[in-house]
Length: 198
Image (cartoon, rainbow, N blue to C red):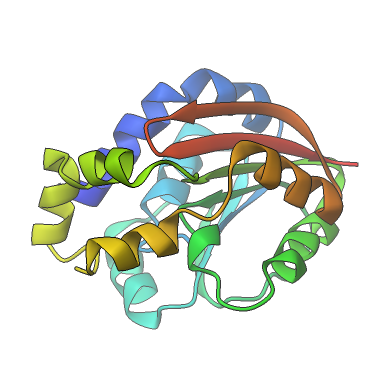
């Protein structure tokens, strides 16, 4: 199993109760920036009555994902644009990579959610350089680098790219896009946010 998949399973299990609370009644779910599609595949298996769509802009990742992950209720698509309406949207370790106007993307997420739809975000948060360096030296992160899942960059470049928002800034940004906070948790260098369309 790929290191990336082990990492996603670990995070999935850690937040399982939260997922169940917000996803168990969802009929249609979108995973934005799904990579190979492992996380939407896990959701499709776990919630067989839910229609799960994963979108990713990198064609080769979706091509590989389609060979690996098959479920009756799963669709993997090459795109960076959302089409349709969803009950829930997830976005994991993607927001910090968006080039351009992030607010446009966030408002787009909101407009593609049904009334009271939920968004689940897992991404980096602003921490000290010392804390970020410690995270980078974690054996799992080192393994992901070795397997070229993460691009190798200078630590200062990585720090600048990944440390964009503190909690207050992040919540404010989502509120301006049309979400109200339902739940937020922090860990080492990440945050886990659940918002509801206002």
